[in-house]
Each structure stands twice: as C-alpha cells, then as structure tokens.
Image (cartoon, rainbow, N blue to C red; front, side, top):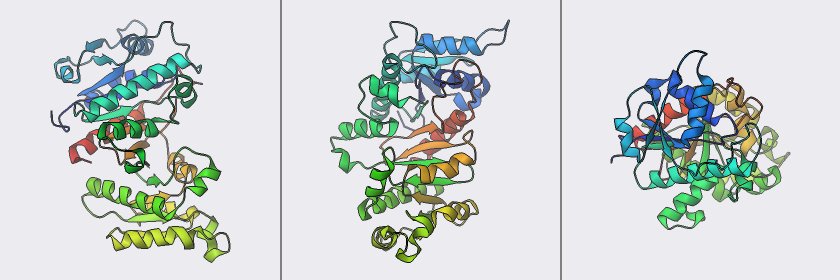
Length: 345
C-alpha cells in the first residue's frame, strides 16, 4: 500500500487524560479531516469517550472495530474506527490520575502504530498526548514520544540510535521552530549545544522543510545566551559553537543565518524573514510558539522514516472527563500529517 493512500493511525494517548475525548470530538466535529483515519487504542475507552460527548437524548458516535489498517476503507461514515492496539485494562482507568495501567495502554498503542507505520501500513501516525510519569511507571524507559519512536525506528532499520538523529518541530500558522535538544534538564541542554548537534539540526530542518515548501528554506538560528552572547561578553557558545555550525551548513548549501538574539529572532521569523527558527533548547523554542495559541500548534518529529505529528498540548488531567477539551490542535495535527504524507516528507 502506498503511504499517501494508506490510512492514518491516531494513537489513544493516556486514557486518564483528554486523549480519548479529543479523538471522539475530532471524529464527530471534523468528519472530512478524520476520513481515512482510525484509532489505535482500546474500543471500550473510545466508546466511553464518545458516549460522554453525546448530547442528552442523542446517540453517541458508534465505534467500528477493525482488525487491520486496510479495513478502514470499508467502515461506514459517522463511525469511529478502532483497532484494538493494547490489552484492555483489568480495571477501569481513573480519569485524571497517573497510573501505570494508563501508561501501559498509551505506550503500547504508540509502539503498535510505530511498527505498523514502519512496515508501510500507515500513511502517518498522529499521537494523542501521553503522560511521561505514567509512561515511566509502566516500564517504558523513554521521556516521551520522540525518544520512543526514535528507538523503534532505529531497531527497525538495524541502526544504533546515534545514527538516526531526530528533532522536534513545533509549528502553527505563524511560526515554526526546531529544537537542538528536547527532554532534558536545562543544565544538560546547554552541554548538548555542540557544533555537531547544531549542524545536525540544521541538516534535518533543511531536508524536512525543503520537502514541505518545495524550495530551500530560510533558517534563522537563535543564540544560546542573552543578546546572542553580545560578542562574547555574555558567553562564548555563539562564537565557538553556533557560528561554526552555521558556516559549515552554509558550505553545504543550507540557507542558515545567525546566531541571532533569542528574544527577537522569533519575531523576525513571524514577520517572514525566516521559514523556521533553530532553538537551542526546549523552552526557548516552545514558549514563543505556544504563546501564539496551542489550539493550532502541531508537534512534528523530523528525521524518522515515518510521518508523526501530535497536538501541541498535554494530557490536561485537570479537565479530563469534563467535556471541556478542545480538539483543534489534534485536528490540525491530522491535517498536517496528511499533507506531509502526500508530499513524501
């Protein structure tokens, strides 16, 4: 099956959070966007989420069980196709609470979808939010989706992790940012800023954005220190690490520019000067994008041999099960996953 015509799997996320709810809401409210998608999850959990969203006196969107991704084409409209990708929990999952049982379901669904995508059975996978503590409690030794997917892809390809570098890109209608490091302490993130890691990030971002845009992307690079080091007064990383990486990238034909002051480079990108900003660590890049609105933000993992997107928010345990969760970011993630699959990114 060609990747651009195969179905898209939406993983359940942590069943104690808003994942099942936003999935059910997306299928109910955006049938055109969710057509050709199915849930890699648990049928009873999805059925319960759909019933919780149904207005009094109205029928919930029905769940249609499928045994394989190819079966999705035969599911009638106004149904939620679900493939049982995890063992049903022995006891009901407590909404809004961290548990190993919920983490196990969330992790198993991601592993199932990753392996199906790597086998070529999916056009893309879209991951609903999981909870990192619950994932760890279930025995998954990964800080999040990105690292778990990297490990699955590397194992599939027979490569060590170091030979399959991946990066996180967060994007909305106004701004894109790609991170040099992801889930680690700030102290460790600073140590992770090396010539090799910055150059690797530039290469990955260039390759991915060129596929999306159909042209050479304009890449702005943030500095690490205030004012991008102010000529060495506030730190030497810009002069000794980031600038040499940019020079090496430019020698390869990559349109990289910087390092620029981190407090202004995102405004310049938003104004159209750059297509994407390379941020040196997690919060430096994610705060500007999330400030513009998580309802339109999409997380994309770059460097994988599969398309993976995710909504730009977490499990929201505080509102889970109350019918308040907004599915907009999930819908945008599905839309972007389909576009990336069609472009072969």
